[in-house]
Image 1: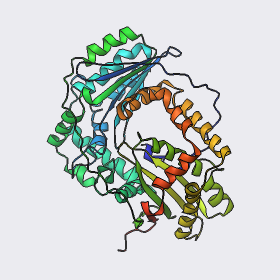
Image 2: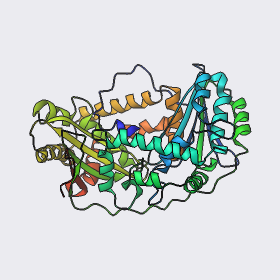
Image 3: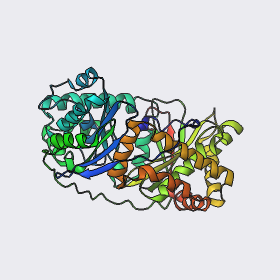
Image 4: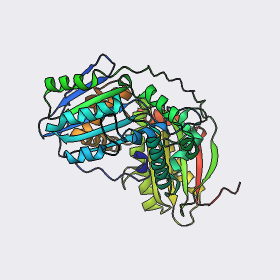
Length: 440
């Protein structure tokens, strides 16, 4: 779902009156390999129960893309003790809300309840993990749901294919070359046996983390967790061995076509390191420097001053194995796409060739401080962060320490990283055009 927001230029962050405070947590493992993280906060009588599975769009075989996203929907169908179609009714009738989302790297489920319904949230997630009902009726139903979502959010939505097009051209071998939601023909081809095998492989307790955050009593919560999750059998060990990509050493020009748009787009795309690497943090700062807010370098130059673009931006799509760094612009009137490329490259070259100002550097630090505080300002946000930092980064403590990484990034480091990853010979230049069909 986050890809729906990536094409929007971020608004300036509002000043926050909150003060970043250390998030306390306790973590341990059950005998079946399930990692548990508990965070107690009694400021409000609510509790978030969440499970993040280390399975995403990249976990597939050729011809069977989109399975993780299909499972995001399928595992709401019901379980041995939950009647089909009753999941959301149970949650809402008990004063709660729930949702799920899938990326290329993980799937996340969560419920938010009044704290007196903690046990209900644990039961629901244990039912999802222990014995979901996976049958032909459910598969058929959710295949159609996902296909309709693909039509609405990707195939028939303006610029909906932009991110998949970037992935297609940045990667030749790694599964990131294929969209998280999958291809229609693969969704149609999925059999019940395929789906059952996928569930057995990826949705065991040893491939997941359970987070309970909010108004809880630690000892009582531990007992409930043991009761509901302890008996779940350990799943097979997930082994990944994705092919490595060869470096991009020569600029590549491609064209893509979207029948849903009237204004074309010019895109500079770079393959960058996975989000655990320090350089990925630096690239986050560079994208904020270039395009976060009306005073940012790209916006002020191309939208305000030169009036060449109606929209411009830069963002780092963070992923576990490789990132995708994009700089894009939509032209005003008949401004040539080549002109947009020249202007965008000029601003990137400035970062490669000279240090950003001390004033701009401090401004970046302030923005990331605000983001850090905002991310941990709600129980839901804290639960998500705890799960993500453990499962994907291997360090739950980053919830308190990550801001130190950003604050330690120097102007010299920004220049160095731009020279390492954002040179013209390392990019794909994409003309994203409003044509009904590719004339070639």
